[in-house]
Amino acid sequence: MSHLSSIGFPVNTGQDFQSLANKLYERGERIKATNGFYIRFADNSGAELYFQENQNKEIIGMNPHFRGKGKMKVCLTNAVKREGSEMDGAFHGWADPTEDNNPDTGMYPFVFDVPDFYSLENIKFPFTTTVQISAFAHELSLYENEQDFNAKQNEKMKFAPESFIPSGLFSPGGQTTEPPEANGIFTGRILEVEEKMNVFTKEKFYWFLVKTLGGEFDVVSDIKLISQPPKVGGIASGSFWLSGRLVS
Image (cartoon, rainbow, N blue to C red; front, side):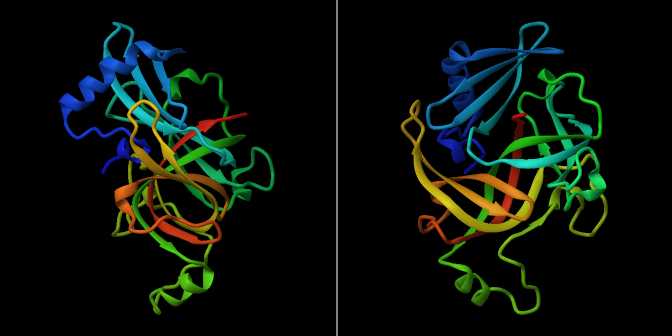
């Protein structure tokens, strides 16, 4: 299971990736960036791949995303550079600020990766915007309802049915992580559910819209990760990689 299998792309080896890239690269939309181009392949299921082409017209990387319904108000505070590729990037921000461009009024800080980061220009921080965030499940537990969730929690440490921990900002020992990672641990209420099919690969995956502390996330998951289908009205809890795109 991987971020790719979470949106219906069964890639297990470097050869699988090369084969996928060869098939989808020419079908993508070219997006101008400051240091090259992003080639965006958009499947009708909502699954997206962003290939990275540098100024020498070489493919140097690729990131997945899911185009969903979730919306979240975020006050961006700074950009986060990545070491993996010169075209990778992320934003640090505060969730759901009560005052525009004032991060101190936000609920909590967190980081999300951005698949088309270097196509965005002239952002002056702090900057409040609307973000669509897809949460790719690493670990996932589902509960029938709030009562079921509360009954199965650890007695020593209980979480609210809507909670968020910005786990990418610190290590298990409590030290600050540098650079911060686009990871989060959250619990939320399932508002919508759909078993999606990647039109290109014919592989199925789960999508569900989850309302948590600070906003709504589009959760995507490999079907093999969970033993029972998610249900509207249930509770979802787990750890996730966060990929976001600015929608305003």
